[in-house]
Amino acid sequence: MKRTLFFIVLVVMAITGSAQESDEDDIVVPSFNTEIERNCIVLNIEGENFFNVNVSLKSSDLFTLFDNPTVKVIVKNERGKKIYKKIFPHSCLYINKEGLVMVGFKSIKRLLITRGEEYGYHWVGVIREKEGIWPK
Image 1 (tube, helix red, strand yellow):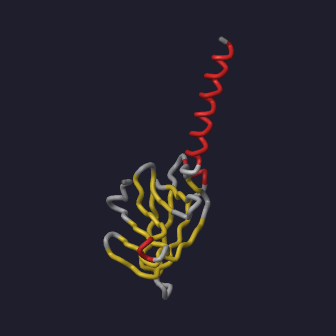
Image 2: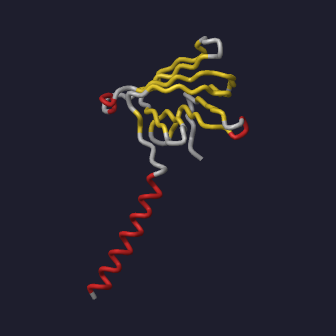
């Protein structure tokens, strides 16, 4: 009886341990007090395409998590002229290990920057301030 119980406990621990290892790669936590830049070959802002732009993202401090976390987004064209500047309230900056950048809160994202296959794996981005980017 003790061996059977021990075997069942061992099997359950092995299953839960392997499940935790596979889920660990997909976890993306919010980044606070972080500033990053991405040079996007194409950036779609509310349906309008911009080419060869620099996107600067700066997240607020960790202490604002309980108050009002914000992310400041500045988009400049190749000449350095600002074409978009916005502070997203109630939003966090998420970055995963492949470099995917997301700005939003919970399941609704307002900004997404990823590598585009059709553009030779250069950075491609989308900004949807009003309706958000819904997961598929």
